[in-house]
Length: 250
Length: 283
Image (cartoon, rainbow over all chains, first blue to last red; front, side, top):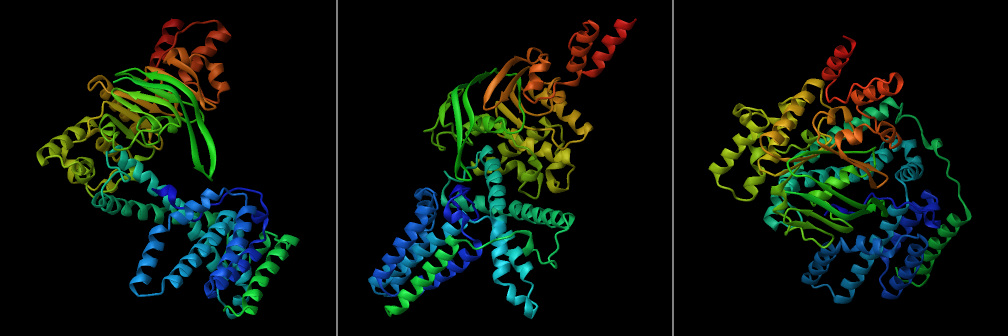
């Protein structure tokens, strides 16, 4: 069951997308998501899909992984579709919305698959740096975001161990009925949360021992430079926004 | 109930989305009502091998025969549900996988799931507790408030309550003090001698394994490189060191005395027996 969760998983690689500057990557994702949300025509969605497919192709990650990631959201998409249908939304618009959701899902999956958590933190703290002028603890926020994302896989591991313990006592999650699944979730939530708090304590102590301080600006720990590919990506994403704007599709 | 691995290989598909072969062409059998130790350095595939035994993982190739059960790639979990009543598994740090607020609830969980009758559940709970050397007063205690050794015994009792014929213990003494370790050794011996269980122990600690196991299997680089009677395996001190395994101190000492002084004092399980042998020799 837990193998299906793809969030916070990094796929090791050395493709162009892996080497893409994380700051530029985050800015581009933001552009892409805003653009996708505002589009009203199917032809533009198809155009964006082609751009996205090119990006996915250059990430050197098997397409089946992206497929699985989207497949895991099938119930959410189905619920969304049915809800809109019941609310009497025209079918064309409903399909358009689904396409938008799939596009955003695929793009964010690509970003998560190709960006190590450390680079993610750095990019967030660099992008939010201006907020420090109004005394907002940017380092703290970025560290919290990155720890939360990386913590998900730890929680999954913990849950997996508990499910294995239950399996050896004859309690199988995968082969059980819905009632049994609910019973299992009731059982495993307590140890997962106890384990999570204990693990959080360990991380906090480890960070303290290693002299990690949130007051210190740690952006200098990792140097990131803008390369030709990063500029090209930024230009491409700006071009997408301009094109969409020019065609009056917003 | 005999256990037999027939040309078993296993590959993880999900380690950072990359395939990783952990076991390759394993052919081994574990004798009935005996204790077998599986040793090997970290990452040699010991835990994977025992997880395959309880169908927590399914082999990528080959079959595992456990009595009437056959575990293979195409096996369905529903078909193997009964297997968990035959094979009990105690994980590393089992005390971290306690779910309930009383020992009674902890023990009864598996049986309640299968709608066993209340009187049957109660009888089995008491029996399981007795097996691990705890009395019935523990039933009402909070398992989180017990000592490390006691928690481990409760975890073992919740596996034994299903009355498995095969018992798998993954690093059972890790994190235990010397006294709890000795108590655990006595318990394992009791399970084998009185209840005729087939026991498989995965451990790095060869000093702990020597006095209790009958057979030893050595895993190295995805494959079984040595197997057989414990003395046959453990006395090959140089080979064990080559595979990154520390031989038992008692055996290593006897081996060194034989090599350097040419004195044969024989192989013993316990240090006390060895001391007696030396004393006898000196006299």
